[in-house]
Length: 335
Image 1: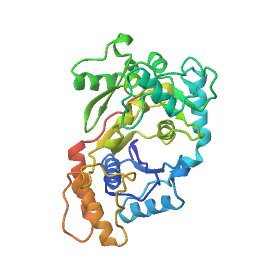
Image 2: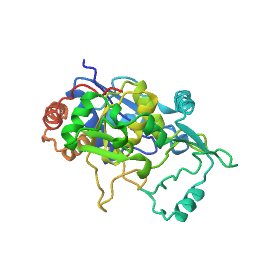
Image 3: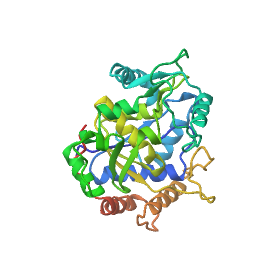
Image 4: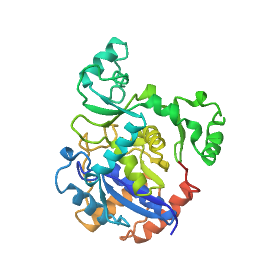
């Protein structure tokens, strides 16, 4: 078996829908093409949004579709101590700070500065508490993105990754840290070269919320490193998170996986399928129903689908076709 380790990490806020099954199949196929391991992680860090028993529903849906993890699933709800330790490390290095701002405070501050437009429903934090709480009580913890970029600039990515960037961006990363000070750059195996100015496009993002819940960005970075994840294959709706996660990986001295984001699955209204907008659950109540669902997912990934009753031969053909489409991965990116 190779050193490849991939994962599928659903949030048990609802059953799997067609879009999440596409991401699950893609990540499973990528692991099989590369003769690696495929892990399942239950992202239940926010227990208030995860009804009891939905984790088992999801695991049973995956199993019905022939997608079983190579190890027992890991639950984020069991890993709060690890997230707190990571946060403590960031605070000790001056890379995280307490924030006393409410959402209303942030919106008012942005409006006064003429920057009231939300980003994907999120407000870009203007850095109000970077220099202190100014008498307010601490509500949350945020990453000091500007400080983080100064201490961990883009040029610290290893030479192999620089070579990829040279080809992808048609220009090498500069040896002058100031030239890359604001940009996080990476290469997506399907989407190609990507970059984002986290400081201006996202702001100092939350690591731990006012209710004490650890934020997704911190939890996923800590978990990927703990599980030795080398490759993240997930839906394109999560691509926007990648720069923040790479920035956190650098700040914590953790390795950066390779990334591949699969095409979005859209509903009849043209919106992406999601649990938030009420996407219907996949049907795995019978073997034939599960077979139909996984074949539909394969079609959405551009894979050949037979008309036989069994998916066993399908899976072997899908693995070969996925390898033709996305190839075998090379050396991983170093921290």
